[in-house]
Length: 444
Image: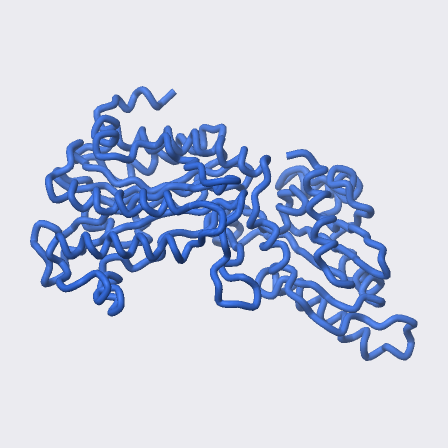
């Protein structure tokens, strides 16, 4: 994405702010063991506003007396450090690339904040991310307040959450963001098809996972957006199963929840298919109940509707399905009222999607308990499922060990929706056909 997009976003954020100064920090490297670290993942809000993927950085936005200023703090150039851990942009190059007004070393942040804070009414920090930086800014402000007699201008008296403003902006995706997710989806489609081709009795969850990780990393995507769930048989009834190390058995289903990412933008897709290549009668019956509920929810996806409406429709269809399967008895209404269906459908119907797999966007209209209405540019998942662990009593024996979920990524358009993952096999017929493919077709 071109740099001016980030500058436009920062200007919009400054317009949303009251008089004040905002400090938005990057992520830092996380210790793994001894002298090794986890792979670096940039803070999503910082990346959204700067496009930078360097650690140990901070963006300061000032709005004071009608004037604005953008200041970037990054790691200084250091030949020795760069020899060991890679090149750094340095303050001058980073400021030039991002089109901010000023650039400084991150080592100067504390000193510069002492200069910058006075004269602003509000201090904007993120209340749950990089609390070390938020605490630093608060302490400096408090210290300055106690020295107020020696100053012409007072420091901020009110602390506000900058995250709420940025995350409201991130709810609506622009064309450049949507383009990243479309391109990543091409790879996600290929990886899910490859998994359907590879999975056979005796193949392991680990082998399937490795193939998908290879394809995600081969590109043009840049790896997995989250830890893949590759769950055969009864393992599919563990919602966040990530061991991915058991053999696949004849007659079982394989649930895969996996998506690639590109430039930080995630895809999040779940498909469930038969290890032996063909659904059994009961597997097909349960699968189609779930698919019907998802199709109904997708049809409701349009401007003005909301996630609560989708969840209600999915719950209604799944509950009727559970009655038809003789898992529940009585009416749909009374089972939903008593939450009886939640034993078999324990999660929500979907979530926002973007720079984070569970994008941190508002689910409620500010100051109310009303769900956020859909509008053009929002992207979310629709992922109904039913789970029947082997350990459950009082359910038909043929259902035990079945866990099925299907998940697509939906973009709201001006007058409806677009299923960004429509190309990934999903009907019983499409899946059984995909299971017949030769895995060699996906390796190169």
